Amino acid sequence: MATTYNDRWIDLDDHQIVIRGYYFPWGTKRIPYDRIRHVTRVRLGALTGRARIWGTANPGVWASLDPRRPVKGTGFLIDYGRSVTPLITPDDPDGVEAALRAHVADGVVSEGSRRSPIV
Image (cartoon, rainbow, N blue to C red; front, side, top):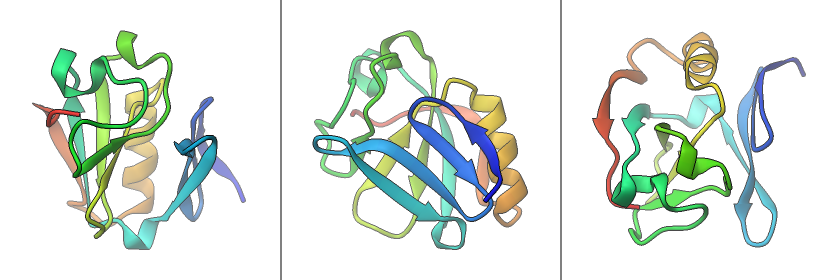
């Protein structure tokens, strides 16, 4: 499998998104591209994900492990039809967006930078 994006916690390959550190203590989550309904690029703030290294205060969103999240300003909410939506914060948001657009149908990735929900 060729990797189209890779950082410490996130891989996008030809078939799926791989999120390391998603489950306690170090479990990996895999989301096949064909399961993804919508991806929203969001701005992070103090109550909307930036201060949350792992977990959530919102039962509908789960922030994967990222010790560097407090210095990042952009994340992605991945709706894949489950009751909990993963929040990822890649080192290169533009690289992840480009890789996602290459693997999912048009209109699945929304542009813009709306504020993230409370996480």
